[in-house]
Image (cartoon, rainbow, N blue to C red):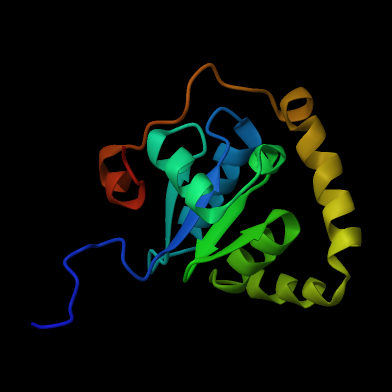
Length: 142
């Protein structure tokens, strides 16, 4: 069919996460659990593909401690990324999108407090997560 892409990742929102962060890995599992339509695909920021996407999105090095959402060639960071993701999950999670009315400097202040202490509070892995066979299609590879 003309105009139809064979790329299964097309029209998917890409979530870039810190692959060695336990909190970030929990967040990925959480998103997967509440995203039954597989709207989101994932890449660790440490992967070759994650680095390529960060660079093409124009993300700065200091943004590496942020959850990054890329949707329709637009990049969302920190609390805005989290709220945009929640907006498309099932259950009651879209209700949290109401916090978008809070100015982002206030939201990001709280987000940054957690992000700066995430390894100390939640721990760190030695390596990035590797998806199980059923979830491999949800992760972008090098």
